[in-house]
Amino acid sequence: MKLNATNVFLILCASFLVFSFSIYLGPLSKKANPGFNSEEAARGRLIWQNHNCQSCHQLYGLGGYLGPDLTNVISDARKGEVVIRALMKSGTKQMPAYDLSENEIHGLLEFLKSVDASGVADPRSFTNTNFGMIEKHENK
Amino acid sequence: MKTNKLHIGNLFLVSALFMIVIALCFGILAAIVYLVPDFLKKDLGFISLRPLHVSSSLFWIIMGATGCVYSGLQIISGKALGNKTAILQWFLWIFAILGILISYFGKSFGGREYWEFNPLWALPIVIAWILFLINFISLVKKIKNWPVYIWMWLTGLIFFLFTFLENYLWVFPYFRENFVNDMTIQWKVNGSLVGSWNQILYGTAFFLMDRMDKSKSTGHSKLAFVMFFIGLFNLMFNWGHHIYTLPTENYIRYIGYAVSMTEWIFFIKIFYDWRHSVNAIQKHYHHFPYRFLMAADFWVFINIGQSLLMSIPAINIYTHGTHITVAHAMGTTIGINSMILFAACFEFLGFNNNPSIKRNKWLEFCFWFLQLCLIVFFLALDMAGIKKGIWQLSEHQSSYSQMMQSLRPYFMTFLIAGIGLLIAFASLAFSLITFSFVHKRLTIKDENDN
Image 1 (cartoon, rainbow over the protein chains, first blue to last red):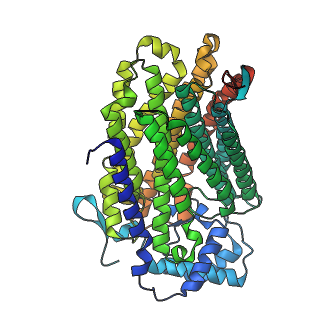
Image 2: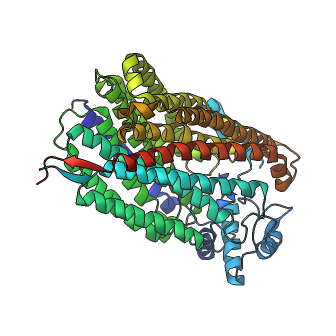
Image 3: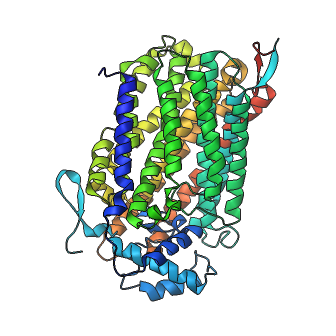
């Protein structure tokens, strides 16, 4: 096969599709994570999106920087579910007090629990490995 | 018979110029929130101001990129392209833009990171893009031996559509219910979407280089094609560098890391070669386009160092989740994309044909003031990012609010530089808009029409 621009383009596109579908099929090989109600967590994810929480907060360091990262806020000894529930109701200096129903707060907390159970976002919990890659520290 | 047809490329470019001014106004308001937490808290708040700023900025880039492709094709074909499909495409964009911006005021969001809005508004954009793709293919299929910029425009068009649709996979529960996979797809989309409009804009840069260089060698050079394929390779596979800390599959992170290291190297080389091939007469004739392309070259150089370092996971762990990421995003959006777009606006709107205004001193001042403000803006974000990065990795962290309080001097500098950017960009944009209306650049005489 002659390596002209059209062929290189088509080979790259085919590789990209294989790569994309390997990611789309990812959830099929994942086991359910215990410790939270997955249906409630999925509902909470939509509440999170409807209120655009990502605009100010981060999950795994991805999001807005006005507020703190909330990936592991549920398991944080200084915060946890009780403090987060209170903050959702009262608001803070920068965050308005959202008029959330008890049902919505429950959904959001289940979502945050599911995020917390998925891994650790704190940069201090990573160590350098070969070739400049990073891995999660086993003790954290 | 000669008739006046709507110049569809210039219509998109002028619409885009309005969007950059709107984007900067929302950006200033959003930046004020960092210093005055109560500012517009109840009426709008950061949750509305941020998407208002981000979406307006992206409308500037995408509308501008569309205008560049249409204007470029008009020059290549030598025919007026104003047709019903393209006009319908423009109306669909205006409908979507108004709907999206108004929906933010009504607190209706998509809630995803970066470019987000209620999924309903994606429909007119998808239809507009399909019309664009159909129009583009019908126009370029007669051209033989495509120069690199036509390849880049086609690639940008196809991948924008693909990734834009991929961005809405979350509406299906299968994708939404697995959080880590959903985040992986979200950042796959974000990376590739940026790559797709970069293809269109870098393609435009090549088109302009070819136009200024009378030998027309840039668009067909082997190096240009190698650069195109490296850009495409990065568009497809480099996005993993956004999610090194996300507990996704390891191969995604390794591919992202390896591919990122190939990024942008050839782009600088081509700019370097081209700069030496443009003679003094051409530099004089294409005064502002040349200057803006050189500015883009400078900002490519600045951003390449930063982005390559940020793509190394061992360094990324310090910069991830900090304002260094914002400096990178804004540095490339303003420094590279906007500079190429302004070069295109000056060229396509015919500013060069008017020697009396070409050397306008106020516009000269705006150009240099813009570069100065962008340097200050970029450094303020980088400094805030470094400070936050140190905080993130310190053993005894102060509270988040205390850390943010300590960044106030950098946010103040960022705001002042942002106001400077608004003044410079708005002056340039309104000069071009006024020029377009006064000199009737939104219509074109068509001899083929009957």
